[in-house]
Length: 559
Image 1 (cartoon, one colour):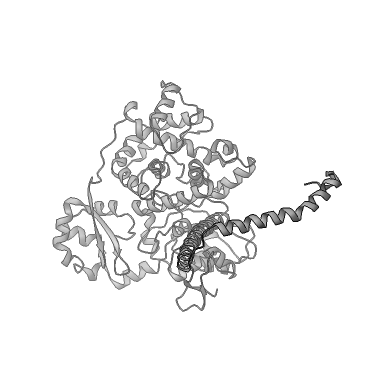
Image 2 (image 1 turned 90 degrees about the horizontal axis):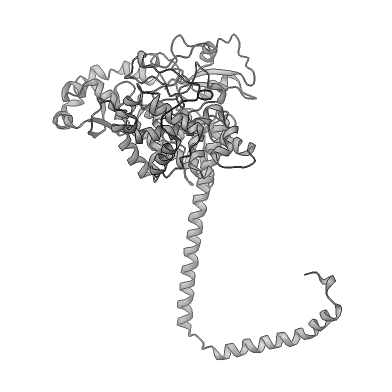
């Protein structure tokens, strides 16, 4: 109210009337009190209890939502920080500049050689930015078919999407029959997993873009498995990676991790196409594109600001999903694959070698490897924790009949202490490109990745300990690098090379500080308070995943 514009006489009149107004209000209140029946003590106590219960319930609900928000914000911060720490890498851990003709990650590599395909089947790679495919199918038909798919995820249509639809449905005649054959085995599994996580089933098509449904795919940049996870992201989402097991190669467990990742990405961006894009280029790059677009949050609005490879990722998703649905209309016949239609699973609690199962239960070795690609040396380390073995259903009775004798069969030969020690000492051999930051030295980098300074120098042809900010170093986590590896060679780690390392993880006897987790904490925020210690150091030292709870005690190594 602007008092300067009110007549002074009106203000004086209002002040003079105020006592009478108050008296009238007081009289009416007294009258109401006299007319309203008074409650007895028991009724008041009962009413008080009801109100107290309601307030307590509301407080509990508020606490629940606050905890959900805290958890989501904490995880969001940790996800974004991991990408910032890795130079805004994708879920597979790549920088935009890492996409070169020689070092292309299979996130968008539509021509990754499937293990069942020969070199002659390798398709010609197209430059999707310049090529324009022609098709006899009119735009109206494509639009109507996409509409009839009734997808929960928005499936846009334009000239770019059309190009990718034609690519998958018409230009990949030697690849799509193989992939569609594999779909008959894998897609029902992925549909069940995404349904379990209350996620759109359509996300299953990402496995085609990632790896052509190859569960043992390994990119030159070190992304592994059907869903092409890098080490840090895989660890963040609870996948186990050690000398014996790499669960990135387990299509089932890694699919659960993908569902969790995409759920978190959707919580950040509120849009499925942006969540899918972030899986390719990272949450950091999507956020940058949003800022550069002036705050717009639709994929096609930020499209010009995304890395070149990511621009084609969502159109490729639409193209793959379309072809999975309408392959018959394009005359594509799925190829029969050797994978069994029905499998059985067994819980393993002891050391078990595939050869023991093959010799006694009769399951072919290659079948065991195909169904259980996560076991790096054909050994299930069941004495450490419970693991799963998948075998074709027709061998289930034979396995049960021989289960008592399986574990002792040639155990001394398969689990020779020298062989086991050699595997354990090998580390996980993950190839990493580390970018040197301010204040870093070779010693701290070596400690972070559980290798030695001399190994880093050998891998990168360094003559001294001097390194520069921004310099890129090739690192093999755990020290298990190929014997000929250097900064100029990019060779995949093999089982044999894994046994040649002499380095070990952070010793168990390393001094440490005990930290009690507080509400709102994340491993990244905790690590920030301890110079030289990363979230990964804490996870490795404690043998835990990134999921922590208030009151939990964790050890912080003194590095």
